Image (cartoon, rainbow, N blue to C red; front, top):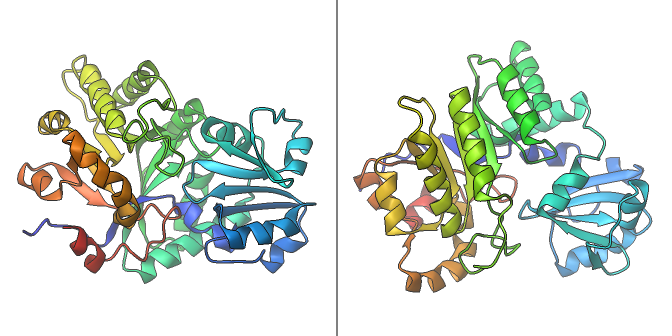
Length: 359
């Protein structure tokens, strides 16, 4: 069956995050601290995981100040010096040897807001690095999930200078050190251009398998990032602004509640341009599927996660859930796309051959 997949559109990326190797330390591809960071008093990076090669490497960072995001994007590893410099009480953090602490979800966001703002120069280098990577892999359009006011300013300047060559849909997120109120403000100020399209707002309703914060899948007792009432309030804002709302939903319970919140708000608006974007959503119930048929909804799947997901999803078949039901979605004219989730996953597995294996 031809699903009509657009292989030139990466629908799930952290655009500036993809460009991290241009200015920071990408531990997934760079085993050692880059030369341009070794003399810095503050080292920022992405890709940390609890692996043996990393354990050896970070011992050399013991006397430095650093903030390293984990590979799942929902956890960070921070140094003792950073805790001291920011005057943070670490009593609720998980100690990592004698080097630093592990912080998760809202704790990570809180600390990230206290970090030094990236310079325009660094943001420009990150954007150009990411663009080059996507263009080399055949992508002409991407959906940037964690846009900020600073991001949009840099992208607009790149287009004015004829340096932007890729179309970018921007969702302004409460993640990455930006509050929801700031995300609303950034979206309201962003102006559409020939290559840039401010599409809406993005919220995180659950976390990830790796952090055991998917709501609920294998972790039925986990707390979501926000309450259902808060989620509904955010959906209402999107309706009032007539913009789209994207919700990070890995666990089937998160998908169910995101759909329920959207349906409840939709009843109060006779006409609306707002669409619901469900992100990740690897598994959900037949009941949810029936609701999807009658809603303005777009699903975004990440094929690069599939191999890692299987060890969890195989156990979920007993719960009578639909798991990556691509053909069924297509048969019912429910829109869906594929994305790499870069930089959480490498964009290399996001190819026509790899996606075909999923189908």
